[in-house]
Image (cartoon, rainbow, N blue to C red; front, side, top):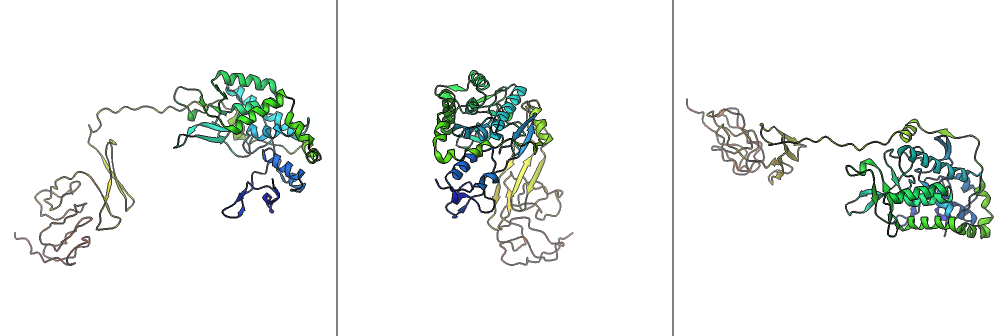
Length: 414
């Protein structure tokens, strides 16, 4: 595999890939030493495709979590630390060895504090999309990743617990037995995950099993079992290659004596806090909606109109009028206007009954049938009357008038 063309010239890190349609490099990855990308970096250096200074360009942020000096990963997932150990050797007392033992101890302590199994990593969770497929994410203990994660997310992946067989076999075996008792063991092995996040659980449940199988994660679990039962077969094959063996000194990097910083306070509090209970919204039963007078509210942005009632039983759709672009009127039941208007309106206009008739200033039906006006077509809003019945005025809101001036109307007789 070629690695040289993936190296970015600005920072010396490897890009995530090559954008074929745009013929350019993708953005660089996290560039962290505690990630699965260190395997590609090591192989590229051993093959002579990457310079040795590329290894020094990888970031090494150190943090103190629960009293453990920890090499931070992108999200604090177990796979970031332990997945490269499936093929790469680990030397006692090195920075990698200390980081792998520290992340396992931190996850074990976090699980003990919350009375849960441990093994948070990249996996699917108890959430599906529109196609009913499980959603995936990367989960870890708060404070162990560079990216700020959700403190309420507790998704335990059995394959991550199997990866821990290479670091703490006794604790990992006990953890896998507990996962099997909780229903994570199926006919073909362990399921993908056990989701204990309160936000994604049905009411009354403490956990939900993600009944799926991911081929990559199943392969990782099998290789971890092979590491334990067959005495590191892939590591011995890795060390047998002359080019890889010549660069094993890179994996023996010692632990720095200083440089670690304390985890942010909010991350520490989230890691030590008790698990939150699922919020159950209060129930409210409404008997006989509409028993009280209904209050009406019209919402509009100038082009789209919606009617909302206080009992929630009626939300009117809108009807677009062809005579005025963008105008809309709510399709509500019409009622007789007490002001003796020629048009029907959606609600009374407020003019007292028996008064001199004029068109309502509210929404009208498309036809304008007022006598004495040159209004031959449809209107979209109100057809405004003149200030005086004896004074002719134009009709500004009538979109289909034969002429813009109405006929003069005589003053009413006393």
